[in-house]
Length: 84
Image 1 (cartoon, rainbow, N blue to C red):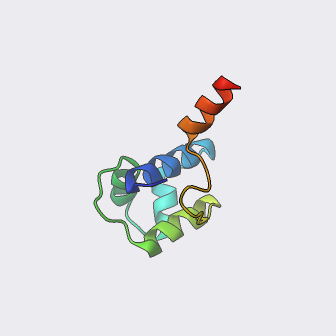
Image 2: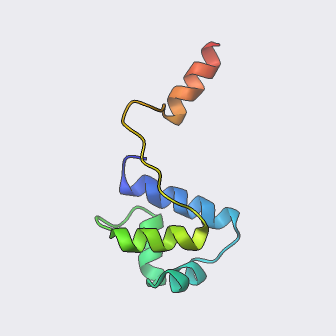
């Protein structure tokens, strides 16, 4: 993930997979439901680290850092799989 919007999309997808409501996740993470909604839709220009980590904790997720160029994007992996 390279953008805040991509983080929001992954959070939204995971929340839906877990069948959790935005309101419930937001309350547990200590943020407003409106802020979570805007984050998931990519409508925020900033989303603090504490807020992000709180939301991820509620969803049972964590951030992993990987050195640039050490892993392919989903599109790259699809192209690679198609040419094999």
